[in-house]
Image 1 (cartoon, rainbow, N blue to C red):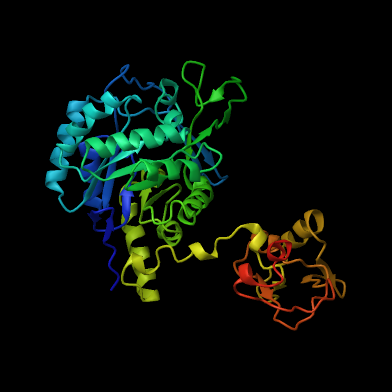
Image 2: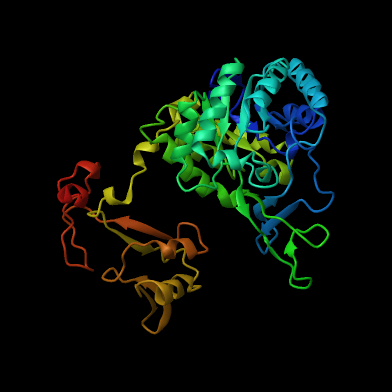
Length: 435
């Protein structure tokens, strides 16, 4: 039987599904309800103290990117860190942790970038009995204008400095939450590690504007006729998050640094992707806000069923196993050749594959045969780009066939010489030849 229990930087939880620091973790009533539903842990919505008071807008805070059938793919928010009194938050954190000792309780913190501010708040947070702290170096709006959030996360020197302060003044595990609004995610991750961070979490939200109202000609959402860029999250950001997680996981300078994966997790498959690329757990926000807390039950059941099917007893059995397959483009196997194949029994003759290939790719799908509507791949023109497999509405109707060594590629006339598994060491690798 699969065991979903995790131990992330010494913080144990019954499953790898944590709620991220966000509106769902803003108060005890929410967190209690989340734990009742089965969440393994939470990161309490970001606390702050020093500096100007936090005042959130009393109007539209969220925007969404929807599909025509009203499924949410992207989510935007302009909400700031908690606007509740610090003492109230600390009291509720203490009570919730006391009532749920087996669940992970991590507290997100953001205060001005000076040593005294961090030194003052850390002991108060530690007194709650929480399991760890997360440094919010990612918030892209509102707080960044005050020199916090992403304003810190975009400067590696600041990350290292503040992380070192927190390790000096707190005994708790320190998780550094990274902003994606940066050119190279490896640099802030290295800075966090150099500052003594126990782990990193990523990604925080991405700078975004959702659109413009065509009738009022104001950006949306807006409050009183004006809006501000917000933080973008939800299913649409998952590929960006996975790339950044993989970059850190395979960077020699951050190798072994624990990662909490965030960004578009809405089902067990999403969680699997993050874990297979090195994450020790995942954090969820948008899916919980859209579907409610009980979504964690489907996530846990799905991941458990997959692990049972594969014979995995722990997530450590597959954590990070996909990292060796992530490579720089120059190391890809140029001897590998694929060709599209259309299953005529399941083809509904809609023609989408032909249109896509004819208009935008390689004119490799014929639309007619013996005067009838019939779609067939011309192997002499197919480059295996797989666009047809993506636009086809019938699952598995179009697949790719890998040419075997010794088989002739009709497009080039060349004989496939190798499908060498480790292309980085293959003698014909262009990178090796150039070297």
